[in-house]
Length: 248
View 1 (spheres, rainbow, N blue to C red):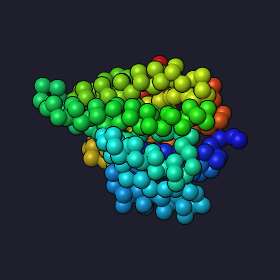
View 2: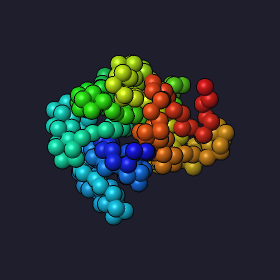
View 3: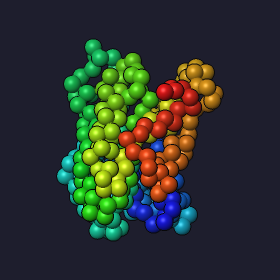
View 4: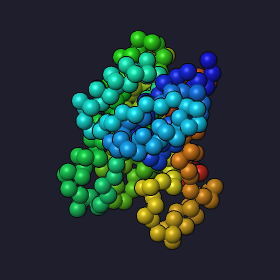
């Protein structure tokens, strides 16, 4: 088996943006995809899009901040789709403000969704991956988890924590042929960036050596590679998808 053909992938935050793109890319590669997010209507639209292209997709309403829903969704996905080979921890939120103005609830909710959510999702799928002695876990972090960002202490901390989590998990499960990697997008055109002014978008692009914003599919194809059989000797790695905005 090569690529991701015949695999089953669970993608969180799959109703839009990068999560939707990851689902489409993996389905194009021959994987069956379990789509998880809070908005069931949008998930159904993504599933219909994938099925119209000849792919297989299942819809699972899930809030990654709810441990009970995570456990129930993983159980249901395995029952419906037979297994979970690939986990893409993509779901994330922002509540931006300067630290002096940041409410404890804004800190807690971002850490709960962006860091505790991936921990719980990984824990929920790990048992079946260990038994089948094969797995791919890919965490969507951010350039701001590497550089920090004004007004995003909560978001940056959650994404930096996800990088540390990725490396620790990679060491824990490597002996069972399970790889754990992260993808760190830079400035990507998604629904989260639509509200930015044209002037600010232009200024950001000036700081990118490739001279343009990234697309959700730029990120998705990186995820697809890390999920593939061909990436089997890569683990504990952070793959930067940022147009050269950060080089390290």
